Image 1 (cartoon, rainbow, N blue to C red):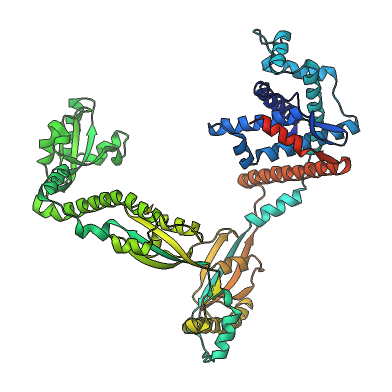
Image 2 (image 1 turned 90 degrees about the vertical axis):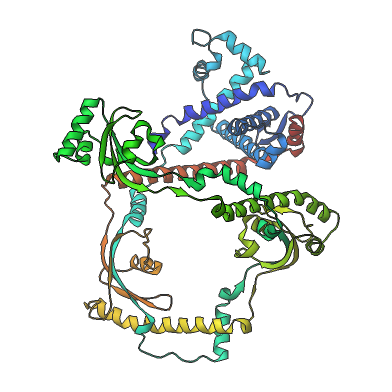
Length: 615
């Protein structure tokens, strides 16, 4: 923590100073001479109107720089900037009040040094220039004494802040405890006791027992908030039978997609390029004599076989080498043949036969695509008229009678995902739908349209027991089986804890090792990982599963290696983060205490006047 605090005072001073300077020019266009001089006070320290206005403009400019868009005052209100800046200037005033009470200040030498470090005050030679200083303040509408006094106050505040924020450390025990919790690993063995291992029968429940179990587990049977929605929708699939496509349109589409329906023969080819014809021929001769093979030559060149892969190629794409490659058998190496990179050897790895789909065979695919495309265009042309009818007072029922739209109703909740609820656009519209909303045409996203109306909104409520009796009976039986299996597994766990083995207990064990508490693996019940981090080595337990029981034994605990580089790095991060958090909490506590002792007064009418002038 101390490492990050050595330059904090200078950082805060110059961060605020530069931010203030950015706002001076903009602030110079706002006139507050006829308004209040302050917007409030903390103790005897006033909060100047100009300080609030400049700070707010600085924040608005900062947002503009981040977003690339101008920010209006109304947007600043919505973003919460006006309240944030007000809180900040109150905090600054509280710190000024405390520094005044404590007698903290800086001398003229420190102020002069700070002025010399502001690049905006430098002349052509890179040094502080008195004329540049005066000119900058004049443009900002400030007097030198006023600016230097604000700089002196900021430096004093920084000293107080640094005294609170710097040097905050936490004991090693804190960090080591966190590292131990996160980094410790467990080795354990576990097994499942399934329903078929149950040695006792299950009772037959009465209606009263099922009703009681239903009441005890009512959350499982509570339906979510539900909206009863009437909707009308139209998709391209609904009107494909009414769309006509003539033969000429089909032939035109066939020509446009000719390459898709008629693919020439292709070959899977590898190519090895050489710098000269002689070098390529020498390699070809060595391959032909059996001295080496294609892979061997590739390796000699320092390449991997994947570096030579051309994928599937056509005869035309190979240029002058096309005839030789397409005349070779699979596995043959041909060449040297010319390529766009130089003489090369080619190896044929496979043949993809020519694919020719005549027009007559392509018609079904062509028709489907054209019909759907035209159906989408038909719906697109209808959508405005449909929306106009709804705006004119037509109901969804009337729309379904007079057009091709289909009427439907759905009891929609956030878990609905079938039928029209499978469309994201419908789910978003249903989520936002409120009582009294008028139906309007909206896009489904696939060329279809829909409109919807809220008929009823139902609060979360349990489904009636009578409608769920069979389901409740199944769940009750599963619960009873789990309870019986856990009792049975408890006896096995006791034997295993006493030194017995899983195999002796008739179980098929699975061993896991080196697992952290945040490292679940597929197929491992979460209950096991939670349990082993509360157990002692050698201990075995029986745990409930879903209609089954689990037996788990902790075999070993491996503490985190505090000297491991990765652990050390994480420890440093945790230490800094925790120290920063504590320092910030202390600073907030100090600020609250100062304001409580000194008293805070904010004139809202003066604040409103500032905001009105900034419009």
